[in-house]
Image (cartoon, rainbow, N blue to C red; front, top):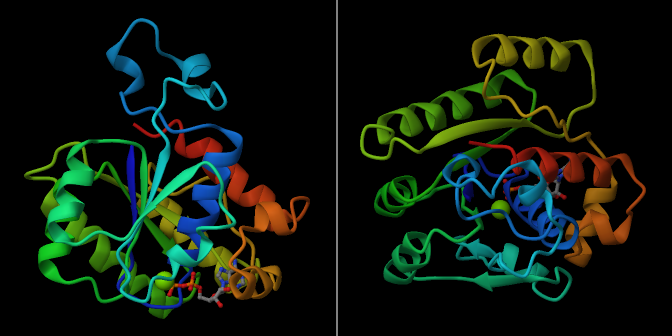
Length: 229
Ligand code: ADP
Ligand code: MG
């Protein structure tokens, strides 16, 4: 399962999501299965959830942001392998179809985006529940739908994040769930000041504040991601 965290906008929690989903997957659920669950008789939920199975390759955390934001978590996220590849290396990495989480910069260039969408299973779109953020989400979904012509495995998930539960945010949540009933993550990431601390320390919230609602939300997302496809 190759997950790419994409949104044209900056500051929408792409890197936070890549780091915390990556940490939750690497630390608590082992690696993601590289083979779709329906493809073999020995697979299934039990096999998918087997923690730290030696048969699974290590999770790859791939940083495409030239600023190296995800790479800052290299020391704090154990059990994952970090990469900051050039285009050719990225193609080779993705073609191996190993469990991966890819963090993208806001202005992803067309060539890299096309390469990524051709070799990705899930585009994870973090969405801050504000009306101006919906435009970026819709544009990202349009590029995913265009790429599905050449990559039929490709799908997308919208992750509500920085969620405060205000009426306007609830309305946006309901609207997005109605528009894309199969594509909205059940996990919702709350707005939390703990992310300021974890971003400054380059630590996943799971190790910095493991009992927080923020940590539980990313754990829930990780668990949910194992059922995708
Ligand atoms: P991007 O990679 O999309 O540019 P970041 O992941 O760097 O965005 O997040 C932008 C800012 O928002 C950072 O300061 C981060 O700590 C903060 N942030 C991310 N998620 C949350 C959240 N759920 N609640 C509060 N602040 C958050
Ligand atoms: Mg970023």
